Length: 82
Ligand SMILES: [Zn+2]
Image 1: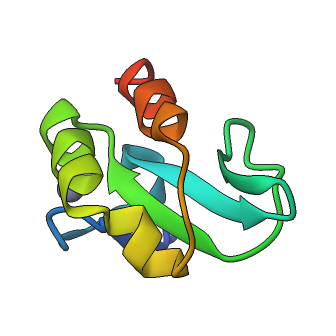
Image 2: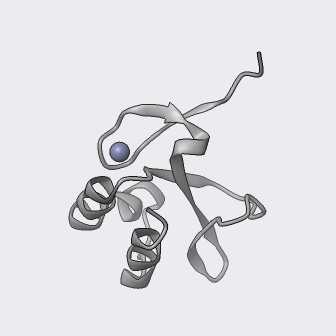
């Protein structure tokens, strides 16, 4: 059985398999959603759950994880994925 790596959601702080999470990456052009698992760099994760995305937006979970600004549109874009 293949081992699926688990990552922690920045909103609810639960560990989940990567395929149940949306990955965000800090790039030179700002924080982006890693749609195709192609972006390199440090990642942050949020559950594919509208509640977690709202909570992360409210608590600025990704900002705190990367210690940088995150465009509001990044959270809006994540909402469209759930
Ligand atoms: Zn979560």
